[in-house]
Length: 339
Image 1 (cartoon, rainbow, N blue to C red):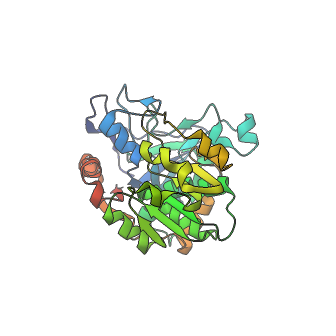
Image 2: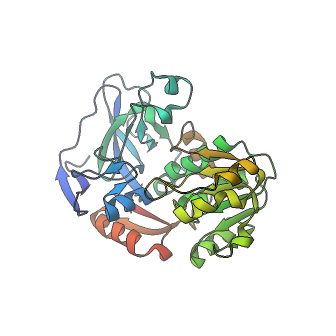
Image 3: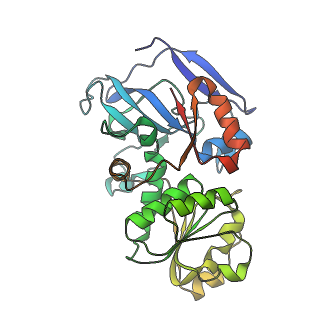
């Protein structure tokens, strides 16, 4: 074990700085994880570029990141689930375990959740991190650390699928061909979804969508061609304009799933279309009970990762990795920072 814990801090002026600190000591029920790989999430880029996302605002320096894999290197008192040396992924939302939502399996709605990287809570862009042993999951030796870091965004897609109750063969439209969109596409196909359309502005991302199983791709534009095109519509881009079109895109009796977080939180929607078509409109808040499935699907190859990981940076160049994610969206799907 190294004697230094490098931590990447983002401040309110949107500066990124690597700071060396002492290695934390796990408390009772916690494990100390040596981080091996981190994915940069779109939310991390939002905080870096705008200083906020939704109701979360960067006011004091904090450590971003919540898509992480690594190795257990110490256990606190009473932590017995893992041995030192176990390879794991981290589920970043630590909940109370006692409230109605935790007890009924919807722990992602826990009012006391502590979510790593939601300001001012520190996240995973560091060398060592202590977390509750109940919120790490084992990964096999056959799964690389960088692929395992995709378990967190994949859990979002799996939770969206679980919330939707998809009938076999149903047609789907995935709006946005970024990391969440491309993982949602694959998850949709994995559970028996039928004809899948991916919608995005960038040709490069649409080309990847075709390689990952999209039956059809299109760019937003002609609204007449976007009407009644799918049984299930997944909004993954966080686009206000796309969100405004979701009800038009859904077939009568269909379902609309809001995964992306639109800017400003509020969007004008055609409620008449929602009612006339008798649509189901479903919100997705992170995930619950999805990580074990995510690890399984990544391990057995149901989820393809080669096309998703477009860039790799060493931890020492993490600030450059964030700048690349912000400035080169057409060339970037998922950036992995390796410790």
